[in-house]
Length: 547
Image (cartoon, rainbow, N blue to C red; front, side):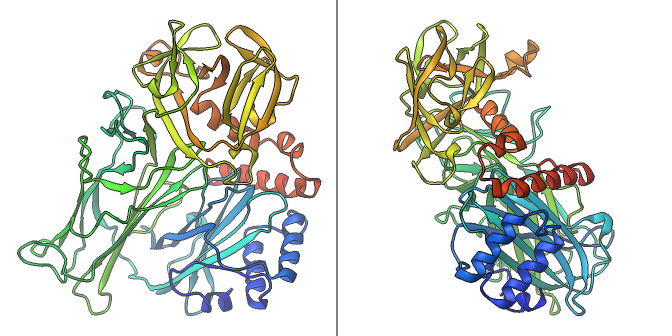
């Protein structure tokens, strides 16, 4: 591992090449630390052997890996967090976070994460087993990921070495936005292009004329660096040099790392007060959409819009030993403690208005309305004969064949009675036995429609590129009526389908069902998948995760 670290530039992720002797040895060491062996993951190691012969380890842009926090926690223990996501989606993936004593090479703390079915894999070192932070610490993040059966696995790492200010106090920072404002929320919910303010939202932005609204995040707060600031203009209070920041969003359950919109400058919104050593950042909430909040490019296709937030500040201070004060704001992942220079906030969930889509939706009164006109003032008919309110809507510009996963492809479903709808493979269709992915339907399968039970005439892949929309059902009125747990369904072109939450839950249930996955995976991956599910279940129970 140390040889691989020596070849890695600080904070610059690199792909590990199984054909390189030192990289191959590092991969073997990293996998051993995550508990993976030839017995538990035979296909992974067989594919690793094949990659060693083919030299399939070139750098590419399909992986994102980042150390989002490192240092000592409030009890003086070493800590490190590393986030990874495979932008192709991942059949199985894993990540590892390490904190090493730079002088001896000894491990001071470690922790790992495993994922199936896509999403980011955030690894956090375990507080319970961490040793005291060393004076000089090397933080390491490692990943392995396999996008789909038959694709070569990818391996990579990132590392950073830093001096640790031992016995430092927790950073004196206050994040005033974004925060949860609505009672009962567990995530910060942000609406984009909402036709009206809803009680369901913590923030909403009026972007109703945009078909592809950018993602907006209000971000304000202060930090007292508790040492003299450097390079602050006495008139504008802006930093003249030395200040740098970076910010990203990570999709919790899909395959996205979203970098900040490059057209928006970030430094002029940060000021310093040399009399108090307080730094203020201001990307405020602005419902009128004047773009003062943080801006991120539009979301791509996703089964879930839950996102991890990350922002890092590097502030110049008048300290010859440590001339830069660094602290981070990032979303919660594991319960393990962050460093004293990290503030954690809840994940962010985005909702936005519907845009052009061809499907017709049956409303509560029996009328039909095209999907682009359905907003959070509407109620739709459900398969139970009642109605549910539309609390939010989602949309994505989908490119057919952009990923190798059936749930991300596009299908045209046709019934024997002549009904048809175009939908993604992962969208749930209502059958007499419950929900089923569209990609799993076969001719003759029974499906529910507005007129009763019908059967599938065909469900074939389509090369359709365009906008896809979905509804999130159950609104405040429904919750007050005791219907908060009802599965959301509606009729699209007369065919009963599930809503946004039903789609996310079905994907989670299926990818965590060994019986379901065994029927869809080559036999050589069965042991790997079973072992990965066991690891996820073990870590969720032992360490308090929800993956």
